[in-house]
Image (cartoon, rainbow, N blue to C red; front, side, top):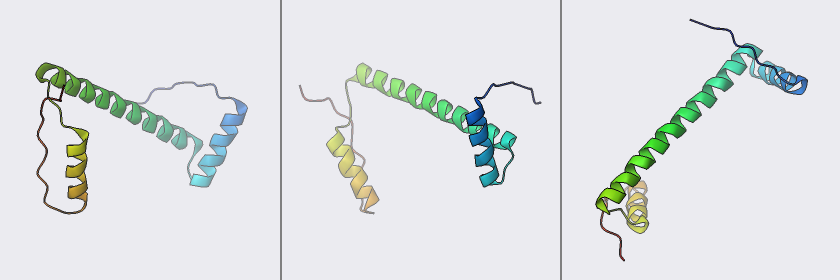
Length: 95
């Protein structure tokens, strides 16, 4: 089901949107919907990443273990190079 929302655009922005839509072979309406959809998806991904980061940090705080960046970097570089790579294990940081 669709609903109607009214937005007020400055004349300059409205003209830019119309030009961009024309270049893309789309209607102004479809270009605006596409832009709003992309922005909503970005914000949803950001919220998901923030939740994941919070959960991982809580895990570090709870167990006091993490993977040192040097170990992770070496693992990732080996994977990218197509070499056999054993995932690094979490350990307590020195100190």
